[in-house]
Length: 207
Image (cartoon, rainbow, N blue to C red):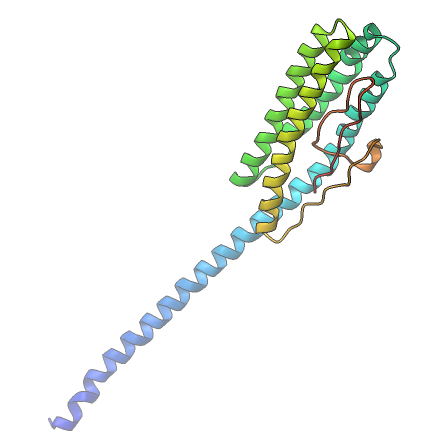
C-alpha cells in the first residue's frame, strides 16, 4: 500500500457524508418552506372568509341603523321608547348573532373579533338600561355616552384588524363618514345611530 493512495480512500466517505448533509439540509429547508407556505395560505383563506362574512353582517347593521332612524322620528318619548323595544333591540340582537357566527379561523382574528362582539353586547345591555330608565328628555343625553364608548371600542377593533390585514398584505377599507346610511350600501361594525334630536353616528365598513 503506497502512501499516495491513502488520502483517496479517506476522501470518499468524507465526500459522501458531505453530500448526505447537504441533501438532508435541503430537504429540511424545503419542508419548512412548504409548511410556511401552507400556513400563509391558511391565513389568507381565513381573512377572505372573514371579509366575506363582514359583507353579510353589513346588511344587518344597516337594518339596525334603519330601525334607529325610524325611532328617531317618534313624536314623543313613549313612542320612542316603544320603538326601541319593538324594533331597535331585536335588530341589534340579530346583528350580534351574525357577528357571533362569523368565521375567525386564526387565533389573532379570533381575539380581534371577540373584542368587537363584546363591545356590541355591552352596548346592547346599556341601550336596554337606557330604554328602561328613559323618563324625560334630559335622559336622552345618556345615549351619547353609550354611543361614544361603542365608537371608541369599534375604532380600536378597526385599528387592530387593519394592522392584522396589513401584516398579510391585505387592506382594510373603511367608508367615509356618512350622515345617513343606506342599509344596502354596507355599513358594518360601528356605533349605533343617535337618539332623536342629536347628530347621526359615524359609520364605517369593514373588509
